Image 1 (cartoon, rainbow, N blue to C red):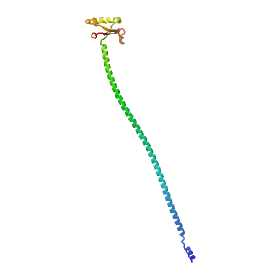
Image 2: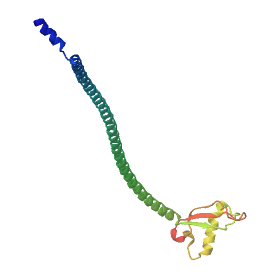
Image 3: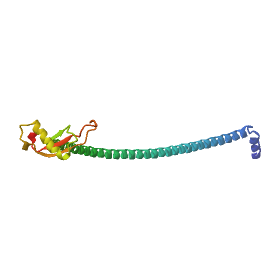
Length: 198
């Protein structure tokens, strides 16, 4: 009886029972495969995000380093320009002070020059006070006879002045002017001892 019952159960088994078991197994395998694919994709996504973040961090670090380098260079240039400007301003102030000093010295020298020129002009005027230039004295009159010749001429022109007042310190001829005629005699230059005689 027991054997018959087992046979009977075996004889009444569903024809789709094996297929259902195979389908369940395939479904389980598909589910495991999908889960595995999802995990793989998630891992790939995590790796991609990590790599992208690392690239971003690297680029950011490089940009920051370049910016710091450029900033340091600009700051150095600004410092150099500031230093040069300070030096130029200092030199400009020194040159301005030196120019003012030179201007003051120049003004002082000009004042002294004006004083000396005035003194020289006064001395020249004083030295010329007793000098006379005679024109037309013949060349036939020797140099040694010029004083006597001029004294006679003065006595003739000024008969009221005593003869002893016609005292001459020196008398001589001077070079002929370029514009003078070739036949004209040289001028005679004399210095009277007494100024009022002149």
